[in-house]
Length: 64
Image (cartoon, rainbow, N blue to C red; front, side, top):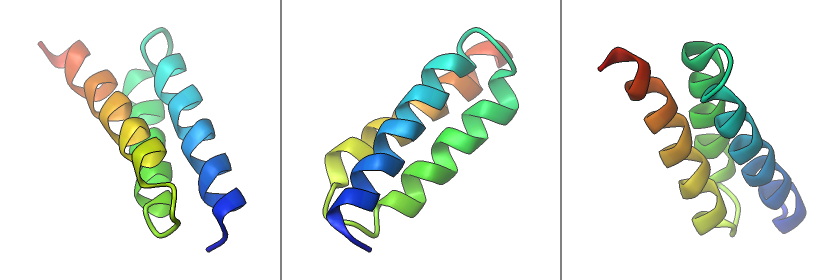
């Protein structure tokens, strides 16, 4: 996977994760985590780990 693709997946995952805090936290949180995991196959590791963490927090927050 190219560097540009990994960067886009990371930013889209972060954006989806942030939106998940306000609307549909389960579905969008899962989408952010999945985008981050797919993006881990690119050189942009930090950006995609951020998307995974934000998506996971958005998933767990409504459950508590």
